[in-house]
Length: 65
Image 1 (tube, rainbow, N blue to C red):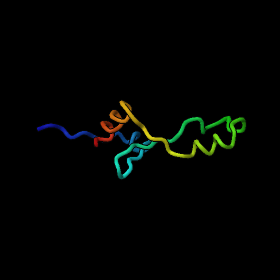
Image 2 (cartoon, rainbow, N blue to C red):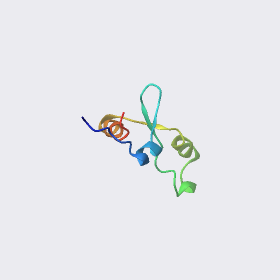
Image 3 (cartoon, rainbow, N blue to C red):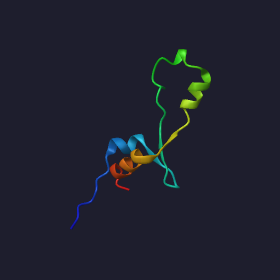
C-alpha cells in the first residue's frame, strides 16, 4: 500500500491555493529599505503574485495536492 504524502507546513503557510487552482505568493522587496522605494512600487508589492512553471509543480507536490 503506498504511503500518503504529508503536507509541508512551512509551504502551507507561505502559499495560498485559489478556487481555480492557481498558487499565490507574497511579493519580495517588502521587508526593509522601503523609504527609498517609490510609493507605486510599494503598492505593487502588496498584490499577491502567481507562481507558474516548475516552481508551481514543486509547491503542489509539497502541499500534497
